[in-house]
Amino acid sequence: MRTILCALAIASLTATAGFAREVTHALGTTEVPDAPTRVVVLEFSFVDALAAVDLAPVGIADDNKRERIQPVLTAVIGDDWTSVGTRKTPSLEVIASLQPDLIIADKTRHEAIYDTLGQIAPTVVYDSLTGDYPAVLEEAARIGEAVGRSGEMTEFLEQHRQRMAAIRDEIADRVAGREAQFAVINGNGLWLHSPQSYVGSLLDYFGFAPAMTATGADSYGDLYQQVTLEQVSELDPGVMILGKTEGEHTLDQDWQAEALWQEIEAVRSGNVFDVSSDLWSRSRGMLTAEATAKDIREIAQTLK
Figure (cartoon, rainbow, N blue to C red):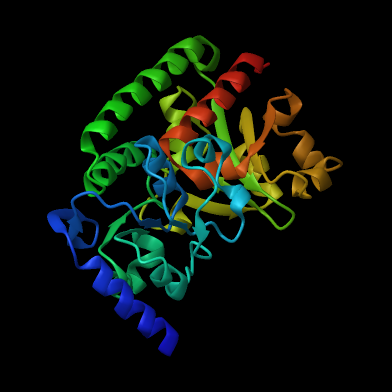
């Protein structure tokens, strides 16, 4: 504890110089430096937003798994960041040791430690975990403002929208009237992503109809619902996209011999597609959305 307090004191002395602007965010208003250079980010989508304006963070909550930062991001930011631990419980001591001049945190995960983060460095908070695709674009603009690169972010957003729209128009005829469901699956369970989730809203953007009925969007549990094989069978999606971790055992491998699985329309018609859960559901940013869009285009082109 004493080590953390000392680090906090050093970091706060470093962070107090050069305040130039007030930035409004999910938990209030924070004075931030005019052009921060030592930024720590506590969600993957924030890495993506910094990459969009060519700013490499000094610290990332990468879940102690550097491979979760997608190649499309490391191609821009490099691989020289310091891990500050998991997104759920980042290490305050490591964050402080980096002497950041800005911290970008998630409302759902980090509201409880917001005051402590603010003692380390100016901290701005956005809703990454429960935000949908339109929210990603809105918050990217806010992050551009927070890091003093609004012009660059505005330009990137315009180009991003053009690239996404081009793919949407290209596949429009292929996906028209198609009902699709995304889920993350591993050896312990399957989690449906609702129409209001990030991936659900992305599929909607590209013209797929939702297989799930829209529910609430007030909490993580509303957006991501663990279900049984019986419930998937009742949902009976025409297209099923399964987010997986490469090399990991998944429940659908066990379900191949189950009649309930084989009777699902997507399974019967050969419209079950495996994708990277890290790319599709964890990253939730613009550069990674463009990589996801390329997967969606490939899926659309191979639909039966």
